[in-house]
Image (tube, rainbow, N blue to C red; front, side, top):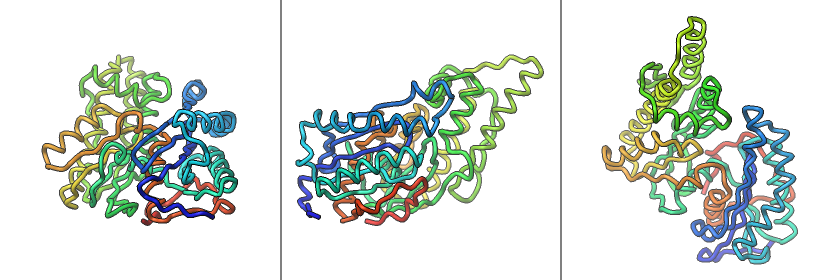
Length: 346
């Protein structure tokens, strides 16, 4: 296989199909996004109240090659001008991941281009590096539908998970609370919007906020909301949706900030990175930015288009895989629904 080691001019075609977005991007040197096409399946899955894995993988198959062509056309780039192919190997829905992995393997083998198998969370973290510069050591608060983690970045692609959720991820809890409020999928942004109109009147528990570690638990918080709604209905009491959303969101953000603040102080990091789909939450963004003033730590938050799943973030991370000579074999690579972030080494 050919080797491309001119690090001043590396163009990567990145493919992301870990859940219900089919996305392809062309990214130069990990920062210059020449194109970032995202085909969302929200309207399809909305009727089911969540992502249906089999439907998601079928829709990826239907559109992925069209998205590849669109990304190349928008970037004004041909396949033979691409230096490497990057794909999300995991974690995610196995059927969805396999679509992207198989396309990437085929392109890599047929074009004789290096293949990069990137970790989805590494992509979310390096999304902040597109418009900024990550300085090590730094701390990432990763918040999404499937992940809630505090990740210590010692160096490039050197991750240590210092805290994680024992049960529900933040995004998962938001979606379940949204259903109690009869809000359509995806529920997170709708709960956030509703919360802005309410007050914290219901005072839900702040699980594990005082624990000595950096771990989280949102299952009890979610259950407290569900039980509150159920009991109120039985008693015929009226619930103010705006106040319920505000009370839940206030509790969630308070716990996230408390744990993050503790980690920043104890680890003495230079930067805080907010990463993942829930990084788009307005209250969380506001309070994370306040830490910049309180603790004197630089805060990096991707712009909204790079918060949710997209291929530009994978291309941004893929550059550092390329730089550190971390490549996959196109004949043997397989998708992994679970994948250890700490196994990624630069």
